[in-house]
Length: 77
Image 1 (cartoon, rainbow, N blue to C red):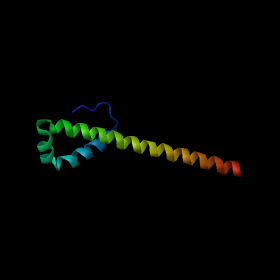
Image 2 (cartoon, rainbow, N blue to C red):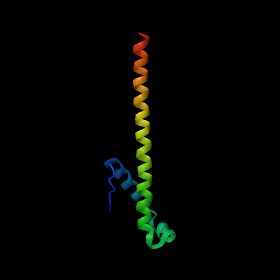
Image 3 (cartoon, helix red, strand yellow):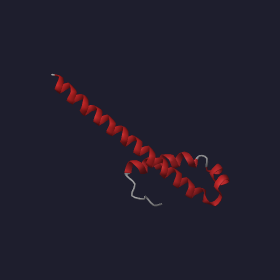
Image 4 (cartoon, helix red, strand yellow):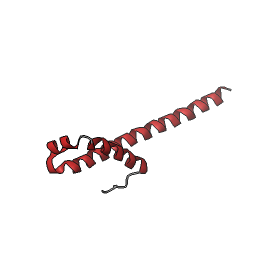
C-alpha cells in the first residue's frame, strides 16, 4: 500500500473508509471484478483527501472569524 505522501489524519480517515467498504466487498467485486481492491483504495483515498480538505477549510474559517471578532471588540472599546 502506497501512502502517497498523505498526512496522518488523511491516512486514518482513509482507513476508516476502507473498513466501511470492506463490509460490502462482495458488491465491489461484483461491480469492478478483479480491480475491486484498486478501486476501493482509490475511492477511499480520494474521499479522505476531500474530507480532510473540507475540515481544514472550516478550521481556517473559524480562525479568521475569531481573529476578526477579537479585532472588532478591541476597536470598539
